Length: 297
Image 1 (cartoon, one colour):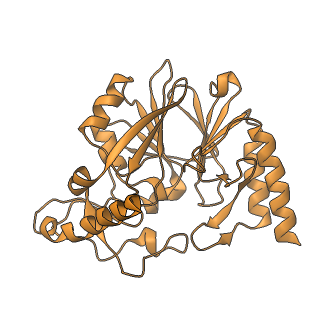
Image 2: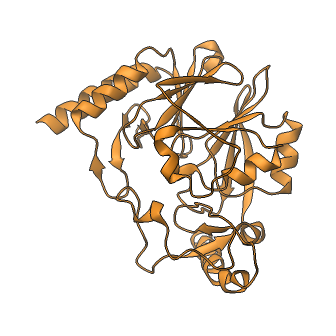
Image 3: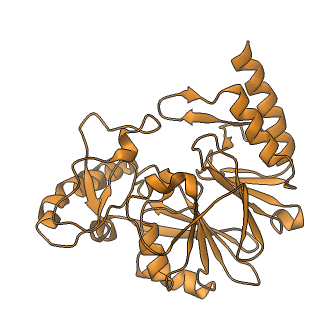
């Protein structure tokens, strides 16, 4: 009960704090519901196109805004080692969609996979102890959030996003590097694979050295790890329960099939884990077969 009330109080504080912030020139406002950060302005934007899209939502109380400065007062990051050379970055209490980010350490430099809203001095200091961030890649627009702040905090680290998602980058910056095609290998020999599905330019990251050399799939929320970690699923819109169609699922599977992976890391902590610990490729195939059978009748 206390945990719930603290989270509610924090969100209320975020919404009420924007009036004072709005009077200050050059504030980069964040959407409370999805965490997307917008260009500096004297007042919040009129709306958040990301939340107005059918894959997201505007809450019943209406559009609300906060700032990174306000988050520093109410929220905290925890950096947790998931396995050798992999760390999750988790914000508490929940803000935006509630996803976590990951730091992958490689001999050639570290990669930040996905992003979450809070970045502060303590987070930067700890990540620098782990070797910093050389490059950034983000699965899809719902997790873009304060990616520009993250890039700037680590010397302008390039952010790799598929060209198909250009319109969803609400805070343009030279550090954002759009790529085209179906596959791009970034720093540390980590392939990005465009699968489409949840978004046209949705991308996953393959970490060949993960799971003790058996390979790990950094999936974001596609495939989405279910409450039962022996299953995953796929959706066009998660909050609005709109499924992907059969041809799209088959295409996603064709993109994932060449990858060797045993473990899957998802964007959310599900039942304390948020990971398919082993047999990940078989879990995806079995789940896709089940999904296709269900939607085709």
